[in-house]
Length: 254
Ligand code: NDP
Image (tube, rainbow, N blue to C red; front, side, top):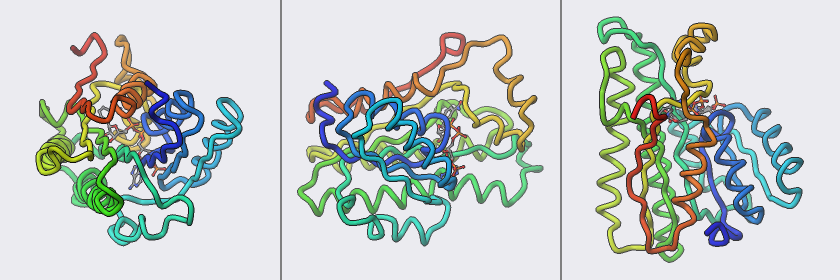
């Protein structure tokens, strides 16, 4: 139950919006004694979220907003070492930061968009996970890794070759790591959302909000809270219970 989250330190990437932001609220709601490290590139937004959590959920919940670009290898390399005193002990990592850029055919995708997607969705996630796994191993070998993949990693679609490939890479990496750490107390889990209404598709259409909104016309997508509830659920099972791999769809997509 959520009592198992008591006092845990939870590190969330991409916490400034959508699913990551909702995870922050859901963890605090589930157990206000959690300590939240919220990271993304938009520090001001993270600070607003921290204030909102204290105002709306619990004044006593400790929240640390940190500016962190997972696509910057140097920041990924030094992230754990640079955590302030008192915040160095992580119990749960939610690897959520991710994006899609462009829906063009392979021949038309801008090279820089390919690089952005691969560095953010794959290299950032792998790099941070490596550091956090080492941290878990160094302090007795316990902790959770929760990776946000996508249905796109299981069922690639035309017009999303790079994004789909990055999410397939997340899936493959997560699977391998789980097997590597089998019979340890490090749980490696993946949650793959179907369609969720977030800022995600605004990014996809280069900031064209009208086009992004049209994606959700006539359908009832998941909310970020729907995914966050699953994240909190898998993190709050008994230590021996690994909800390894979860696909979450809105009913129109299932
Ligand atoms: P949003 O666009 O709402 O949020 C994405 C988050 O990632 C933001 O907080 C953004 O913060 C952060 N982010 C992007 N690039 C970086 C970076 N280089 N460094 C650090 N943070 C970064 O999208 P969602 O909430 O929908 O997406 C969250 C995850 O869910 C992604 O991995 C996405 O692939 C996955 N997903 C989403 C689906 C959907 O339909 N929405 C479906 C399936 C999976 P900032 O800009 O401040 O850095």
